[in-house]
Image 1 (cartoon, rainbow, N blue to C red):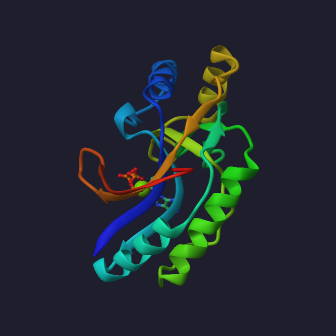
Image 2: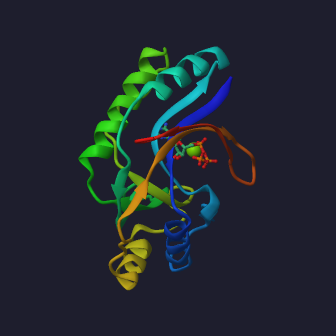
Image 3: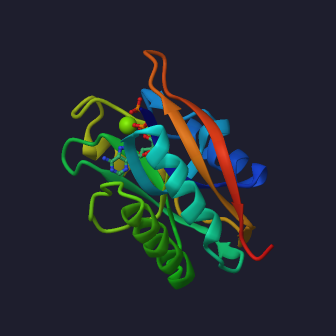
Amino acid sequence: MIRAFIALPLPAEIRSQLAVTQFLLPLPRPVPPANMHVTLAFLGEVPEAVLEEADTAFAALRAAPLTLSVSGLGVFGGEKPRNVHASLAPSPALDHLQGRIVQAARRAGIRVAGRRFVPHVTLGRMSPGQVGAHELAKAFGEIGAVASPPFTVAEFALYRSILRADGPVYDVLAEYPLGG
Ligand code: ATP
Ligand code: MG
């Protein structure tokens, strides 16, 4: 079995910008900038043969490159924050592609959870309650508006994730060009 997910890689300039933001936030477990990404579909633990079939389906998808931008900071976990992230500005093209990727994965036999897609870049994780919601809100206020210039993403990728005690290790298993 392979723990896998589909995500968009981010340009180095955007990851650098977000690395600066990370330093201004109370983040017990910051995401290394090299690992920053936008998850489109978490595939979970998938048998290799199924993943190969899904790979064929992902490779068959045709879509134009995406123009995206970072816009704002957010928290998952409410009063007991567990994830601090940068949000992406709304992109109908991204939503559409994400839906097609989930559909392709399901057709290949992968059970993908049907939760609403909230495009984001995780900046850090914490045990629930480790950092107070109020403390985070205060840091957000001090940082002010976080926004990036528009950037282009010309591929999505299939990642393997190996969970380690000192954090996950991601490997790109396949890249799928957009508009190529
Ligand atoms: P760790 O679990 O050690 O904190 P991680 O979450 O980065 O590290 P994975 O759990 O392998 O590593 O997740 C890979 C990607 O998929 C991450 O972007 C993660 O946020 C996302 N992800 C993980 N589980 C789910 C899930 N159940 N639903 C949606 N996305 C998920
Ligand atoms: Mg995880």
